[in-house]
Image 1 (spheres, rainbow, N blue to C red):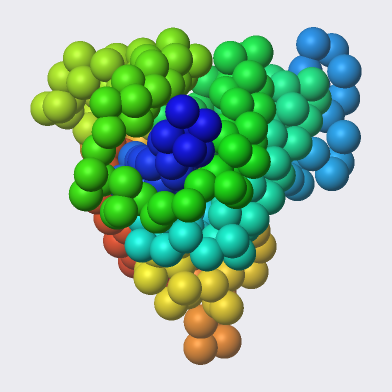
Image 2: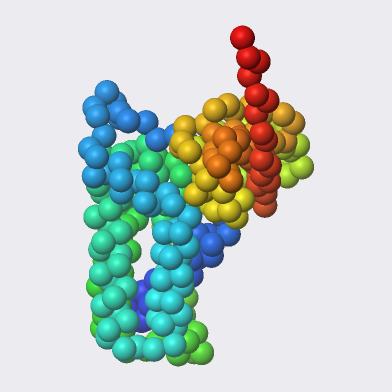
Length: 272
């Protein structure tokens, strides 16, 4: 029975890691302005920087790919180093979730990408602790995940089903997934709520911004306005020894947002 339990933990951790990888790569986190205070208490600078790094798309993709590699490794090999790396990763995640629970409950844990955007609760912390325990239990498992799947025993199937049911109870991401499925997929972009943080994130990651970044004279925009499915952001710039304005048009669509740019030459002021 103990061996079957240990083998089940390998399957469970592999499935969780692969699901987390898929969610991070496919479900974007909803942009929101993180407050400087939580319950009236100023957010420590270190935690604020940690939250900003965790919300970056590059970090999300990197973590997702790392989780995917660990999940596949659990399936194809029973090497102790893979089990140790998985256990350490879940232990680190438990610490991060615990810190967010205490200091940044508004930030969300990001465990499953954009599906984990809601505030960190006790269920998320307990889930991370149980995953760490599963990692410890998997250290002594004799089989790799694929070997377990080739000859699934009744005990393994029952334990796996029970743990998946417990995971579903402890996962607020299921409610978020159902909520997203109920949202109309054809909501016009001109009616969609688009926070400024989302606009700036899309702008700064675009090729249009990279093409004009060196010419921008100030990071503070001259003007910002919205028309239909676009938000326009104008910056002062200097091109060919002339003072100009670079205007970026950032799409407000839910996905596949595009950015366009144009250079406008201000009209000379009238001479008095």
